[in-house]
Length: 290
Image 1 (spheres, rainbow, N blue to C red):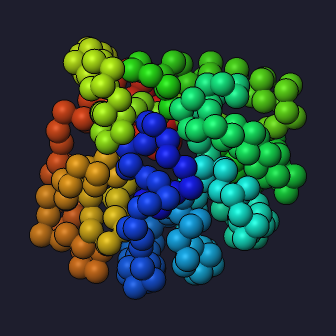
Image 2: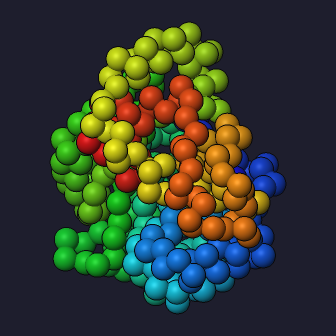
């Protein structure tokens, strides 16, 4: 969960002081599973995954094993954080990485309020650098998507409408282009939970999630098609469960013991935070699900 930022909504409580980091041994175990199962999507997240000393090695190795959609979730500012990261846009391009980046708003004030002073300007520069190597262009295969998280105790607005607003503002103000916007609901975990309690919004927010429950969203929530591997190799139905220390309900607990047949037959571990993924149009790492 090491990260160069300390965002107030972060559900993994990431920051510069975090010490948890995936080892090359665990990465090799993940690669073995990918090779043996033919997994088609690999999604690297953090913190800032680029800060892992084995990040580039892992990207190089993983790009050779047939992954069709290789996602790196970048906070953007890491690209400008240090000279050793300045070439990341070219590195991503070389390995056809699908870049998914956090961008709370197209204005400086709202972005910096959620993610810290100076984040907006660095994010804009990073997006321009990604555009410069071909990311986000209308006819480009170099995918660049943005992620929106609400800045308070409320649900995201309509994803399609927000995407139009983001595209219009970023193009007009900064000549920036991207492919899709993913609207993700903040779940009551870690820092966002602390915020809800401190602002006395917890009960109202939970009622809002429950009242907005959408049965149609259940079929496509990410725990039905994605397996989360923690920094130390343990398995979870999603990274939210990982933060709550709710491991998979299976004899198989670790990536080193991976058994697809046993894992496919498991029951998903659920709790009250799951209402966040089934509220309104639903929510997942790829945005709305209903």
